Image 1 (tube, rainbow, N blue to C red):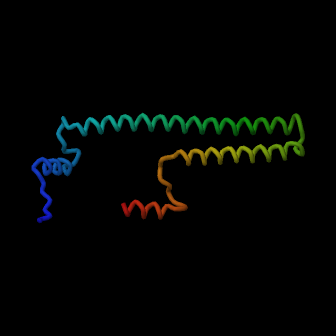
Image 2 (cartoon, helix red, strand yellow):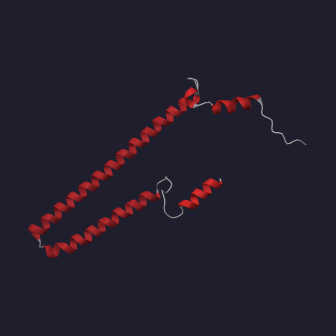
Image 3 (cartoon, helix red, strand yellow):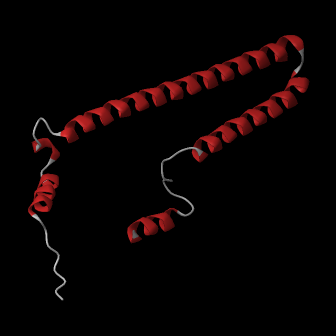
Length: 130
């Protein structure tokens, strides 16, 4: 038996259509409309992500200002530095732990592949093998 793969005329036409650059596709092509819809959806997602990031940054900045103002007031008007120093140290440590926990939670829910670090070469090799 001959192991010949035959291509029919509609398969050849489909392969040629896929090989033609997207910019040269005709105006009525369904791929262009689908691409426009995907671009609009991507723009909506990017805008939502940008608004969320700005909101997180503004809340973090406001909390730092509020913490500084509160510590300043408590140090110079209510208590002395000997009382406020350990309090400021532990609250700053808790704030650092909270921010690091938020970072870890954000990385856990991220869909982006890791940029480097543990296992990145193994993942690259697995993708190459596929």
